[in-house]
Length: 110
Image (cartoon, rainbow, N blue to C red; front, side, top):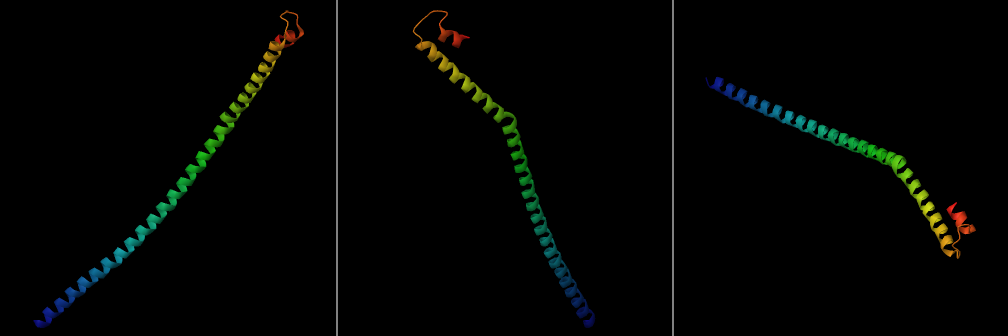
């Protein structure tokens, strides 16, 4: 009977040790899988961030091309027109005569 008890104890200890070793190996495997998934998630997050930045750059370029540049051109045109009008007004102001057929007034007023 002592042999039976001793054998049962050895089997129980081996069973517990085997369970513990299996748990330890599974834990290591699980940790490695978690690390791999975290690395993949970080790489995917970086890729997504890069795509967002590329898309934002594309939007800014399109906005600049389609809205900002035409508005800048129009502002420059209007600025030039205002300068011309100021020059013409100065010409009219400098004119001493108030006749309708004055050459300065006719050239300005067209």
